[in-house]
Image (cartoon, rainbow, N blue to C red; front, side, top):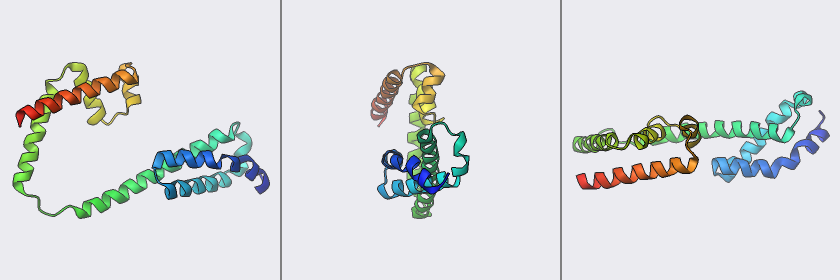
Length: 163
């Protein structure tokens, strides 16, 4: 594929790619960089484009993967900055208080109805997305949100009673 054919095939997707990248990373400069990286990757694969039926879908897949790489990198960068801001010594009384609160929350979670407890654990401890929970449980997305909301509300109300 020559440069002119490449421009005709992929440049019309620029705005859509930018909007998609911005929606994922929520950063205008980062989204523009990601779109440029995506075009660079597409250019490097230009000789393999004969096998691609849908160039728009191919571009979006490369963009999405580039966004995920960007988020991983910025997450790690932010995480390392965050770690350096943590003071070396944390008051023992604060650690004890946090541990006590965590134990209370764990007890409250154990008292939840089985379905609420399972979905809450899947979401917040096992890190499943709503879509994964939907696939595992067979529940609708709306139903999952309602169950999580009720579980959180119950824990919040019960925790306030403990204090």
